[in-house]
Structures are given as C-alpha cells and as structure tokens.
Image (tube, protein in one colour):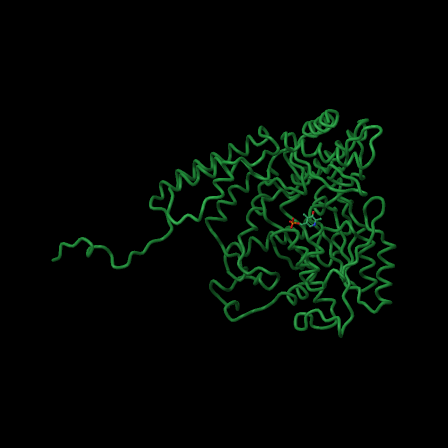
Length: 492
Ligand SMILES: *Cc1c(COP(=O)(O)O)cnc(C)c1O
C-alpha cells in the first residue's frame, strides 16, 4: 500500500457549478428575497431617478474575474451598488417612454423561471409549452381575436412588429420571397404604409426585412395625430399607378408620442378592399380593450391580420415580454418554418410537444417568459387589470385637466388615452425660448428626483411627456409633478 495521499484522490476531479453548501445558498436566497420585498415596498420613498454614483461605475469597470469570489460578497456588491439604480419604472412617479411597472407576484415567477430554466421550445412536451399556449389563448380571448389564430411570445414590441411585418411580406409577395429575397428587378416593389407617428421599430423592421425604407410610406396625420386616411388612399392609388404593389397597412393603436389610435375599422376596410395585409401595432394601447369604459378607443383592433403588443408595458408584466398574434397559422408558419432533422418532432417522449415555436419566429431557445404573465393574470384576475388600466386613463384625464386649468401650463396634444403632453409657458417667450426652458425644466424634474417624465416633440415643439402604464401612481403624484414643473419654471 502506498502512503502518497495524492493517490487516494479520485482520478477525475469532476465538479459542477452547484454550491458547496446548499444551506448557504438557501440562507442567502431568503435574505435576498427579504431585501427585494423591502426594496419594492419602499420604492416610493426613494427619488424617481438618481444619478449613478462613482462607486457603481468603478465596480462596473473591474476586469474579467478569473478567480471565484464568495457568493455573499458578490450579492452584497449588487445590493449596494447596482440594485439602487434601476431605470426605476417601478417607481410611482415614473412616466418616461412607455415604461411598465411589473407586479410583485412575478418576483416569485422569476425565481421559478430560473429554477426550471426551461428552453421553452414548444416542441418539448413539458409544462412551459402548454403554459405559453394557454397564455396565447387567454390573450386572444382578451382581444376578441379568433381562437384559431397563431401566436408567439417575443422579447417586446419591436420584435412583435418584425414578426408581423415579416408574415405580411411572405403572404403578399407574388413570388417566393424566402427563396428569392426581395426582388425589385423582376417584381413590383412591396409597399408598406404607416403614419408618421408609427413607432421607430416599424422602420427598423422594414430595413431588416430587406424591403428598404424606400418601401415605407410615412403618411401624414390629422390634428389629433391619427393617420390621414384620405392621404393613405391617395398614396396607395399612386403606388399602384407607378407599378408598385401596396402590401401592408400598419395601423397604431396608441401611438408612442400622444397615445392616438388610428381609425382601425376604416383601415381594416381599406386593407380588405385593396387586398392588403393589416398589421396593428397595439404595443401598449391594445390593453385599453380590458377596460369596459375605454375599449371603444381600440375598436376594430381585432380585425388585424397581425397584432403586435407588449405585455411588459400596460399589462404590468416584468421585462421582457411581447407578443404577435397572426390570423391563420399557415402564413405564420410559412414565413419562419425551417425544420432540420435535430428539431423534428417525435411521436412520443420529450420531443412530442404541441408545436415548435421556432417555426413561428426568429428565436429557437427561449426563456420561460409565459410564466410571469400567466401567474400574474391568475393571481389578479383580468377584471382587476381592466380597473388598473382605466385608473391610468382617468389619471391622464386628471393631469390633462390640471394642465388646462393652470395659467402657466399648456397642453400640446389631445389626451387620447394614457399619455399627456404639455409645457410650461411664460408671457413674452418665443416658442424657441420655451423649448429650451422646458428642456431644462424636465432635466431638473428628473435630477431632483421629483418625477421621471420623458421628452418628445409635438408639432415641432419640445414637450414634457407623461405616459402612464403605472399601477403605483396616485393622483397626488401628478399633483407633485405639476407643482414641480411650475416651481422650477418660475425659478428659472
Ligand atoms: C414601445 C413600443 C414599441 C416597441 O416595443 P419594445 O417592447 O420597446 O420593443 C412599438 N410600438 C409602440 C407603439 C410602442 O409604444
């Protein structure tokens, strides 16, 4: 027998990334959960925004870690230097862009998603495939969309628009666009139409699909920021005369600038009579449908051939989660299906899942995105969501009325849904001077942590823009915004 201790070690030093002590992980996990609940509960006590301190920036400038660090220390760094500085769309006074708040229930979902770590392929006969399909069915029923429609969860509205616009391309092109690519030498150019208020992701999608921005007509809008239907009809007729092929009308239910909704029924009629595809970008506005008092705002949305929306905006789902619904499984699958041998479904076993989601979109492996909204909808019930959404619409009306009533505030666009555009005014100032003044007011409102609205341009003028997809906001929060803007404006 040899005494050399090295010889008694296993020949293969096999290890995993599992913790040496599961008990340590458990206790850190409990502490982290407590911290997260405390953090969420106290969110309104912190500023709406605060600058990133140098300590965080230096932590984030560290070189690639080659050696391990204790898990507790890594967590302590995150808790001290990263956690306090989110975009802060969880804050009751966050109204920038179209930020969604998320809900506490989904914290638990996130833990389950990470634990299960499902690839969510759909072809896997596992729980995640069926949860996603049920969620898609629920979404169809929410929107009165046909029950046999096809659908897919994606990363967000930009991807949801890309999927819809891609299906329009394969469906309308009079040649096999997947084989040939876009071929304007031998075929008419496919033309897409959106209003100038359409989201930037539309343009990005058109470019990625190889159509080129020369194939995108940006139609002017009326005073209420909805598409000028007469101008759209003329553009379609002109393109036909020029030998192009009008392919797709893109309507917006809730534009990002002002929350305006295009005349959806009229655009659906037009698409039908012109034999075109109707894509509706309902990124946030679609959810007005859940409020009995406001669903008329998006009437006709259900007539879309493809419907894109974001669950992470006005359904208060944690990032990231968007969805595209497509009328008819066939055009959807014909656009994306590629089935190599290693992805073929099996009759039984692991690979006998309901369908292969990769045949319906760009992604193959996907996170178990469906669980957050699925748990949230079951926990709150859809009626509750309708009430929260209506509350946001009423808050927008409230802010709208406060702006109108205030002698030093001016409304810059009609408040159609949950977005308010306004500015501070002062007698004798030119529009240019007011642009600069309001830009400074907005920065100070953010920097002083009062609230977090964002900026846009409305009719060429700088606008303080408040988009409300926030279940934590209260009327007093809008009072604080009005007071902050007026005080800072007076002070400057
Ligand atoms: C936010 C938004 C998008 C893009 O969605 P993302 O989830 O940010 O990719 C598209 N259209 C409209 C109208 C939006 O508000």
